[in-house]
Amino acid sequence: MSLLAKRSIIKEDKSNIITLGAIAKEEKKKDPSVINATIGMYYDEEGKLVTYNSVDKALFELTSDEKYAYASTPGSNSYHEALKRWVFRQYYDEFMKNTYVGVMATPGGSGAISNTFTNYLNEGDMVLLPNYMWGNYKQFAYENHASYTTYNLFKNGKLDIEDIRKKAYELKEKQNRVLLVINDPCQNPTGYTMSDVEWKMIIDLVNEIANSGTPFILLHDMAYIDYDKRGFESTRQNMRLYEKLSKNALVILAFSGSKTLALYGIRIGAQIAISTNEENIIEFNRANKFSSRAKWSNATNLGANLISKVILDDKLREKFESELNDARNILIKRANTFIAESKKVGLETLPFDCGFFITIPCNNPDLVYKKLVEKKIHIIPLDNVLRVTISAITVEECKILPKIIKECM
Ligand code: PLP
Image 1: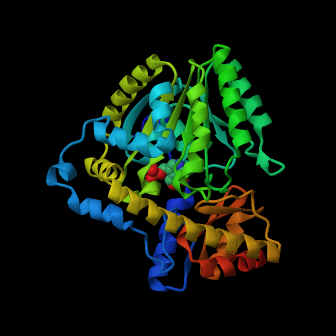
Image 2 (image 1 turned 30 degrees about the vertical axis):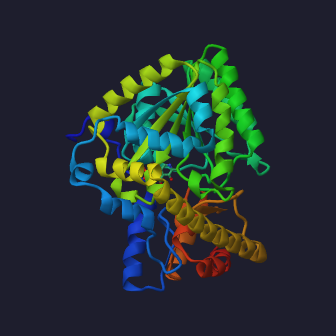
């Protein structure tokens, strides 16, 4: 008889991203000609993991206390200030005036998602996820005694807003609360980025349901926001819609230090909650502090202080922004190359705008994965798609991959 508790017997990390990523890394170590397009980290054109010099410089300036002392559970005031300034950017003053904001430091965006599922789903509730998704959302749901249902991400190449509406109303009827996850911009795995009109329709829906008396929580997973080809300013524009939220609604931004500052292994991020109702933020702070304490006690002081330093020091921030701009431009070049070659060889891709990944519809992804491995190419097979991580490969590799993938299909 299993010694595991009942709910734990079926637990198995079925995500192949980490496992297949490790295999690819091993193969590449043995043979540098291997193409490793698996794991969501950003590599330069020489195949080296990118470290931002401004972030590295800030690291060397941290004192022992700033690096090694315990952090407070929610994170310091300066961490909160840095994140609000970074995320709201040109609308910082507006947000401070028109909304209430709460910040909770977490281990990566993962911690932010986990805490949100813990505190905004009742036992047995369903969270509303996209049908093409970062698979870990499902595990966060199970771990938090909840389950999930999905909305169609696309209809005719655009966001399937009608399906989101339909599913949200079903959840309203079933459980009288809606927790909707939107991963935008640069959605993982497709690279889709919602238009201004689509954002407006989502927020109208949030307010409509919230005003009818059903609590609506929108988890905006913005892990890739700083790699959006439109640049810092435009990506913050849609967030202004949050200033007009219904008092019965809450938006939680999941911020990832892994992606924005390339601090993957440091494990730092945050939940940033926005509401027009102060009570929602007081509750948010109380419950999420409790959960953080119960799960990981506090996030890494080193990571939070590093982020505060880079963002609050004008010189470092400017340097960091220019490094991020360079990284983004290389990603755009890779994406343009991959998409142009795909068109040339007739390889279909799901709607893509920008980001770390491009996704190819595929009926037999596992078989195609095996064929590609024989050709020393490692990608990630998911449910009826292949995910190619363009953040991890070079422009030259983006040029040759579409044809080989097409042949293997
Ligand atoms: N959200 C998405 C869509 C992701 O792809 C990832 C990581 O791959 C995360 C959130 C969380 O990353 P981290 O916990 O490292 O911040």
